[in-house]
Amino acid sequence: MMIIISTLVFFILLVVGFDVGFAMILAALFGMLLHGAIDPVMAPLTLVSGVDSAALITVPLFVLAGEIMNQGGVTRRLIQWSTAMVGHFRGSLSQVALTTNLIMAGISGSAVADATATGSLLIPAMKKEGYKPGYAAAVIAAGAMLGPILPPSIPMIIYAIMANLSIAKLFMAGVVPGLMLFAGYMVICAIVARRQGYASKPRASWRERATATRMSIWALMVPVLILIGIRSGFMTETEAAGVICVYALVVGMVIYRDLHVRELGQVFYSAGKTSAVILFLLAAAGPFSWLLNESHIATRISQGILSISENPLIVLLVVNIMLFIVGMILEPLPALVMFVPTLLPIQAQLGIDPIQFAMIVILNLMIGMLHPPIGLLLFVTSAVGRVPLWPIAVELFPFLGWSLIVLVLISIFPGLVTWLPNIAL
Image (cartoon, rainbow, N blue to C red; front, top):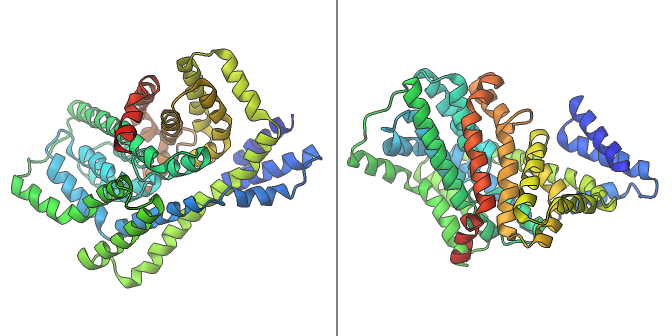
C-alpha cells in the first residue's frame, strides 16, 4: 500500500508540473513518512549513494567532450562529409542527417546533445528543400536515438555500474544493434523519399570525397580512438573520456580553430548544466529505488513475472512490454535506476546472458524517447525545429516500428549483441 500511494503521489506531482527528479524525491519522502518505521534521514543518504561511484566520472567527461566537439565546428564538418558520401542517395538530406548522427553517436553518447546539434542545422535545411517539417524533425529524432546505443553511451555506463558489468563489453554490445537501426532507418528514408519525391544531390567525385574526409578526419577518429583505446587495454573508460576531452580541445582550438578561448566558459557551463541534470536524475531516483527495495516490491514483481512462464523468450516478451509502458511515462535514466534492480534477479534466475539483457533494457528504454507522451526527443526536435509535436509523432511511426523489430531480434538472437564483446574483449 505504501508503494502504491507513493507511486500515485509521484504521478500526481508529474501531472501538476513538477520536475521528474523533484517528484521522485518528494514521493519517496512521503512514502518514508507514511511507513513510520523508516527514518526519513534515509532520503538524503540514498540521494548521495545514488551517485557515489568513481565510474560516474566518465559521464561529465564524455558530455564535455561532446560539447567541445559540437562547439568546435565538428558538426558542420561531419555534415559536409556525410553529404559527400551519401548525398546522392534518394532523399539526400535525410540520409545525410542519419549518417551525421551515426558519427555523432560515437562522440557524445547523448541523444539530446546530438538532436540539438544536428537538428539546429539540418531541420531548417530540409524544410527549405521541401521536406515536410514533421518528417524532417522525425529523421533527426530517430538518428539521435543512436547516441545512447553506440559507444560511448551514458545509459550503458550507468547500467554497467548498477549491474557490475564491464563498461567496455557493453560498449561493444551496442555496435551491431546500432548499425542495424541505422541501416533500417536509411531504407525507410529512401522509401519515403521515393513516395514524396524528395530530391537527391549530384554524386560527389572521389576527389571531393577525399577532400571532405581530410577536413573531417579529426572528428571521424574520435569513435575509433575510444574503441581502440579501451579494447587494447591501454586506457580505462574514465581515462579514455579524459583523453577525448583533451583531444577535442586540441581539434577545436588548434586544428579547426572554430573554438576560441573566450567561448570556453560557455562550453564548460553547458556541459556542466547537462551533466548536473543527468546526475541529479540519478541521485533523485536513489530514494525511490531504495524504498522499492525496502518494501520488497522488486522481489514481488520478479516473482510475478517468473510465475508467468519459465521460458526465457516469454519472460523477455513480458519484460519488453513492461519496459515499453514504463518508457511511455518515464525518462530513460530514472527508469534505469528504478527498474534495473527489479529486473536483475529475473535475468540471473533464468540464466539470460547479462550483456544481452542489458542491451534489451537499454534499447527498450531508449525507444521510449521516440514515442508520446514523454518522448524526450519529440520535445527536443520540436523546440529546435519549431515544429508541432503531432506531425513529428506521426512521421516517427516507421522508425519506431523498425526499432521494435531490432528489439525483438536481439531478444530472440543473443549472438547479435554478445558476438562482438566475446571476440573483442
